[in-house]
Length: 179
Image (tube, rainbow, N blue to C red; front, side, top):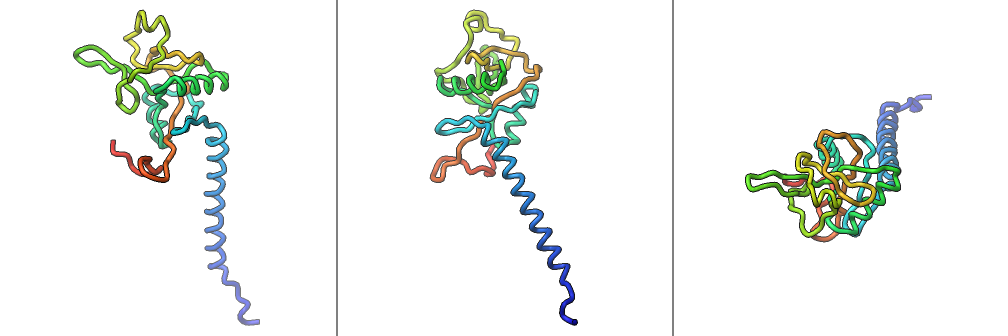
């Protein structure tokens, strides 16, 4: 009978939108599985061990693309947490966001966010006695000590992400950072 003509166009559109929503949901679930379940965290940050071998500069970029920074252990506790994360993953070393900055008046170490090291560092005794200044990048060993390493070496790395605070201070994810 007349009037039972299928308004298929409209249904197709609804089904299409549903497919998109389901796709987004799938991505969200994947994100939770891959990221949230593998994370370590402190009061202020999340840490993600990325098991993709990269050179230092690529690791820096990779963390940035994920919305974070190459991890910067700025305290004994954070350093311990990261070292445990590395050893629990069965690894011996990862890149961290520390590098040597050479200026006319000598060299110093800075974090990936360009701030200087302040009061905390975890160099091995050999590094303290005889710093390997030819290698300007830094790796964190599963023991918790830092060592200089060639920036061209490829290894896994840890990214850190700020926890967004509802009030004040924290940057909302997706907000553009002024670089």
